[in-house]
Length: 378
Length: 123
Image 1 (tube, each protein chain N blue to C red):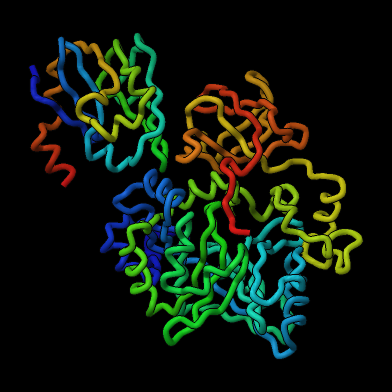
Image 2 (image 1 turned 135 degrees about the vertical axis):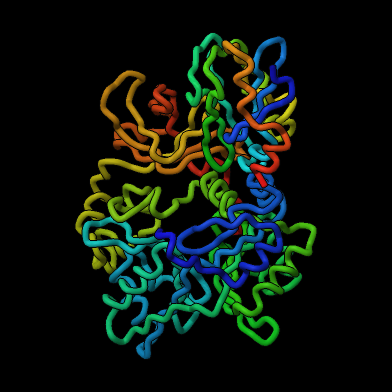
């Protein structure tokens, strides 16, 4: 980013500064990377109680059509390898936008609001996503970026009890429910989901109500503010992809190990087989397997291994076989953890390979993800 | 000869003990790094030049290097620190020293900042 570019601020910017947030540039926004508690304690607090995250930098996009929800679903299915028609009103599903080469343009959440589809996309991709949607969806679909709402996440084992004190209806929600709920005089869009591996909620609230809501939450003993630093270590322990690192425009959903996000209806022999960008490659890989795959990695020593660390078959082999795409220290698992890409023949759990760190080859074991069991309220 | 603790622009502190230079990082640096989770120390006996990367220090946020403040030989490293990296956050100016160096001429430390100068430097 050029220094001339003005960083954008979320509706909670002043609140973050007031709360001692250390602000850093992220995806064009000035965002809190941590608060006075620090990354480690913020991470552990989220796992033990409840953490509040400002994710207002993410894109909120509404798709509407006079032709109704089924026509909308069919339209979106031309851009995602997801069974959108099966997403019932009040439910949401994870998906990806694919490109013609079978790579991933972005990953997103798709909610069926009953009469519209509500998408949450990555901050760094949102402008491109909106252009992509507008260019490729049929004329009957209106693509609207929602810019008058903040997006907050409340995550952790006490999130439900805390949020129910303000919005009692959330107690009844299940994992991946996504509802419009009247709160005070306005409508909040709440889903039971998140990016930490914990039970929790994402809440789209009118921008003008965000600060009071955040203040009410942090006034509770169970709630601490959590910055981007802990958000990253939490999602890494949960085995969740960070777009631009673990998946990108060159990696397919099969390579990215998120084939579970492609339901039967869109696979070979399904009711609406293919029909999304890059279907040839992706459907072929679903049948034949991909050349490389994203796997979990456990560095055997204590040294964290970060993205970009090259991987080798043995302690001496010359040819690089793969690369770490995300890595660091996992505060809850109390050890370094990572994920990265390896050729298919090295992806079996327990396979030992080597990473080259500061000129030394260090052993790494292929491991199952998540690194810590997720606690979703199914 | 410098007896007071000296400070570098790289946020290291230097202290003379038994004719050796003891090196650690300042409280300011420890706070900036955040929770330290890993430290890789050099081998004892390593001969280093000023600005060589001698210690790798990783926090939950990122990896950084500690540079040799002077030419000399690493004669002792703090193994206890490698086993308990969090000490850097708890006691950066005391228990959490990184290594001890033997240098030619202890007066080389005179070029570094005093505590008052360092406080002005970090603002």
